[in-house]
Image 1 (cartoon, rainbow, N blue to C red):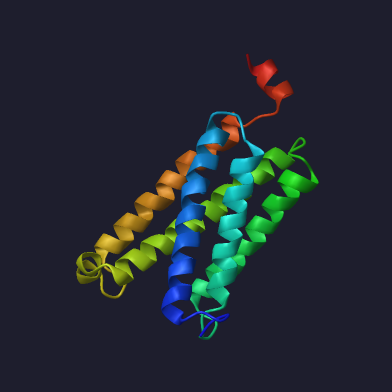
Image 2 (cartoon, one colour):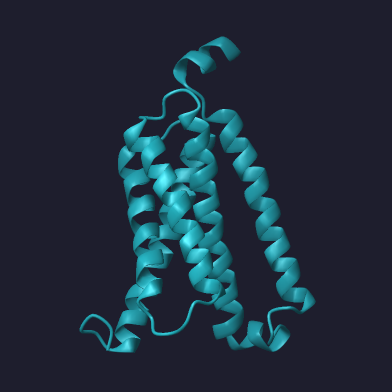
Length: 167
């Protein structure tokens, strides 16, 4: 049992939190690219993504790559929280927020892809160890997509003063 839940119930909770984090992360990323960012979407993304990482640590087991990704994600999310709510996206903190939010979203999707290849039989058959070409290609495409989206968000999510000067 984990915090009073069966392992299967806790796993389901963790998966639901992960999927909600990914969903709100993509909505938040779309907002950044559109040069807007609503606090409710950002809060949902940050909250669900933090909950995903925290619940991941509650599964039994040693320090492994998934937990290391969780630590990196929590550090990025902590910086994103400071940039958004502590520094109110002022000046360079807007860029800091974009970079850390996109990194956290990428890591959530990265782990989602790993889990998909481990748990979905059709994918697992094509990459049983996670080092086969289908897995590597999918992860490379995901990384490239996030680099492109991250650059777009960093370029377009500007302060109102910077946006006015660019026109």
